[in-house]
Amino acid sequence: MMMVKAPAKINLSLDVLHKRPDGFHEVEMVMTTVDLADRIELHEVKGKRIQIVSHDRFVPSDQRNLAYKAAEKLQKKYQVNKGVEITIHKQIPVAAGLAGGSSDAAATLKGLNTLWDLGLSADELAEVGTEIGSDVAFCIYGGTALATGRGEKIQELPAPPKCWVVLAKPSIGVSTADIYQNLKLDKADHPDTQAMVQAIHDQDYDGICQNLGNALESVTLNLYPEVKQIKEQMHRFGADAVLMSGSGPTVFGLVQYESKVHRVVNGLRGFCDQVFAVRILGARDPLA
Image (cartoon, rainbow, N blue to C red; front, top):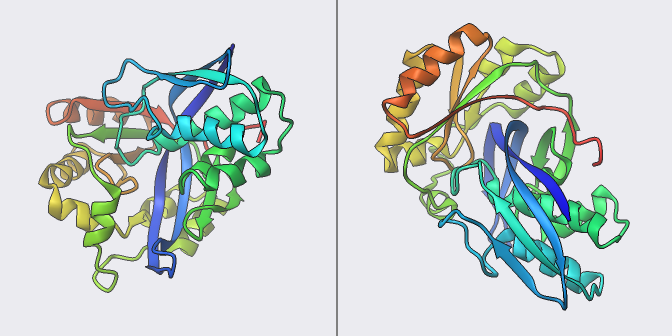
């Protein structure tokens, strides 16, 4: 049996540059992991059966599940004649813009690498991850990184200065494909990615707050007014800076001092069922 943590991520900066010939979008994202995690439990089973177990009704238990795809890819690529039961203990909200599914897939790849004794490096696992989903490669390494291409080219960055992150997810799911479909690149707010990277290198908390930006945010806010309302409330209750993560609908606020965290969390509880106060993890998984 093997247990692996699968932490959520937030986008400190997300820019969409253009549509590529392969149909994907060229992106520039600064991502960092936070201390909200699913737990993945792996049990070897007889034959080559892959089984997903989860008590969350929103988690698919078939080939649509990214953890299932991860196990299947490893089986095929490395001719593994073993099966696995993958139990997903969810803490990260589903379809939230926090890479929960991608992180589950990355944790499954890392766990099976050990369980099946494959001896693969983090770079090799990230390569497999790229075939599963855009954020899986980042989730293999964790920590903080600049991701380019369609999200698979990963450049490690230092951990940002320590702070609190308040996450609030309204009770809606958002389809990433729908958001991209409604995105008008000439009307989007394009963040200054290099300024964010520089602020992280300089350990400049105020600079990070000033340069938070997400080119997808205005699309989601227009389609889902409840996301806009949460963003406004988070500002009102005193978060230092507020942004939507990924394609949404989760909104996060950075808060430097713990004394302010409770006020922000308590203020949001009236508007939102799922509110979390977590820390930025920021540093890479030592095993990556």
